[in-house]
Image (cartoon, rainbow, N blue to C red; front, side, top):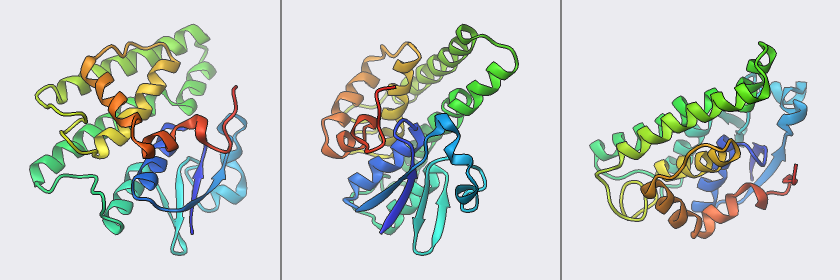
Length: 211
């Protein structure tokens, strides 16, 4: 049994939940409430010294970092594939996913926003920071796939780019960021119509709450 260390509202954990659902894999959740710093407990940092979610327990070891986990799952369970066969196209999909996972998400996640408040920024300034990061990043993402058609980021099939984009759009709404990019909105609608994406949504998780 795969064990996923997760938090219902974590964008990074959401990515892994989506891939697990796309692959039709059974898994067991181990939830950690990031709002109460549960991920910093000694029993969890013993397996993930970064004190971050997600982490995936598999075959007696622990994998960390959401994109590494997603690529592992894709390599071990290759159907349906998360990357095109063509090397150039694979690189473009990976670049899009990294643009979100490395350049947008980390600098407006809970840990960083707490740091900003700790350095004296009020909540309005912190939220403004998050919006600016998200909006500039999503604008770039929209341009990266402006030459593409089809229901998903890179055509007719889901790739890792879609897996990473959908949680980020939800996060953008939380901060009131601009998301009115027709292509991105259409991709989101197409993805969320799929059972795997719907099952991975935060509100569908056992540890979800309305707070």
